[in-house]
Amino acid sequence: MKNKNKTVWGSRFNNAPSKIFEQIGASIEIDKRLFEEDILGSIAHTQMLIKQKIISKNKGNKILLGLKKIRKEIIKNNFDFKKKYEDIHLNIEKRLFKIIGNDAGYLHIARSRNDQVITDFKLWIKKASKEINSNLNNLIKNFLKKSADNVNTIMPGFTHLKNAQPISFAHYLLAYVEMFKRDRKRFSSNIDYIDECPLGVGALAGTSYKIDRNFTSKKLGFKKPTNNSIDTVSDRDFALDFLSSASICAMHISRFAEELIIWNSDIFKLIKLSDKMLTGSSIMPQKKNPDPAELIRGRAGKNFGSLQAMLTTMKGLPLSYYKDMQEDKALVFSSYDTLSESLIITNELIKNLKPNKERMLQLANEGYTTATDFADYLVKNNNLSFREAYKISAKLVNYAERRNKKLNELSFDEVKKVKKDLNKKVMKVFDVKNSVNSKSSYGGTATKNIKRMISRLKKEFK
Ligand code: ARG
Image (cartoon, rainbow, N blue to C red; front, side, top):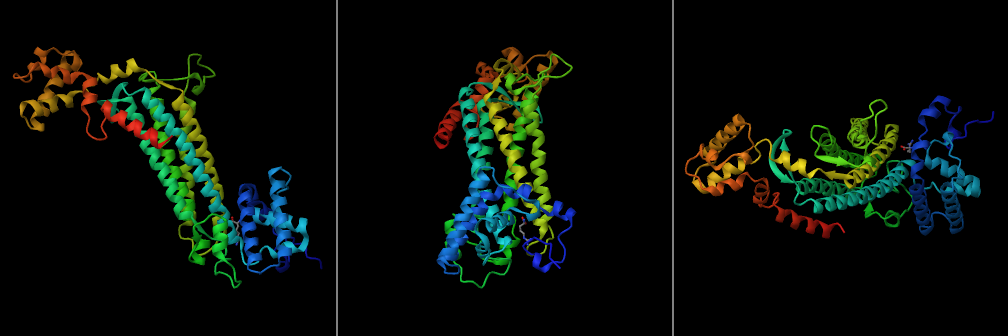
């Protein structure tokens, strides 16, 4: 009886896999994105096999030529990815057989798809992390540009979405720069963990061939080979690190998006977005909606979902390899795609946003935002404790509220109603510009601080 099973393991099987499992079990539609890394890994592995005299030069060189041909075919879209060959590793191996014949069978000596797939995946995540960091770099530069233009733009800073204290719009933007810097650090330090080469641990136990793992590790740009073969094929921490960093970064930009949505609203009117960043309504002719910002906010959910799914997949999974883990690629790719797009949109948003400076200033004066400055004045000039000063300032706020006045609209005589022995100089504390500039402690919103910070950051992010 002729065996109809064409899989690489067909010789042990009486039947071909059921069609339905072929549909579900095949990952080729997703992991074909690893082709470049898979071929790089196979090339390094082959070179090592030749160097160690595990395969002959002649056979090895045939394999190398075949692999390079396959790479070209895939790049030129001339490669027929087949579901029946399951994944990228077996699709490439099967094609190698077609191109060079039975010598292709020597390629898989001393390796398993278990070490192969993580090698590919680690290489891919390294590349992806670097790309995200370069997007973050662009974003930081554009935030710095906008900050430099807005050092003197005063707006209300919020806590609880209530006007709190006056701040510079630039200082607010620089807060995001700090978040993006931490995001970059997270992606960079992930690379440190990724930097151990899995190739050569085989299915889970290592191999009896005299391989040189340092050679392949170096060839592929890793720092060193992994230490424990079982951990190596079981480990997906590096995927989780990526997903977690992507989630935190997505969370940051979703907060920015949310603020733009609020500030762009007809109630706040703190910023204006260019038409490029708005869409209309099919029924309400007057509408201009901040859809791109809403998409960034919404899509963060996809990043979080991928992280949650991956954690759940790994939770309680015994060592070492299980097919469950095959789901890792779809999650990481989707998270990467989502985040990359969101970062690009965020970049467009910051470039196409104008602060409404008059409105910002007007709102900075609303909500008694200089009440703390008044209390601080009393501490410094009238020898009061902060709690005593707080009470007096609260009285003034109550007074202003009853008269329906802003603090900067009160006369000196009115201010004196809450504290008799005041010097006229006190009136300057109700000026929001003065308030901003008085916050000169390190990290505060004072203009001179911001200028110094911008020039320092501009040097860092050229
Ligand atoms: N496509 C598989 C994956 O991504 C490759 C590893 C297969 N290993 C195995 N023992 N079935 O997980």
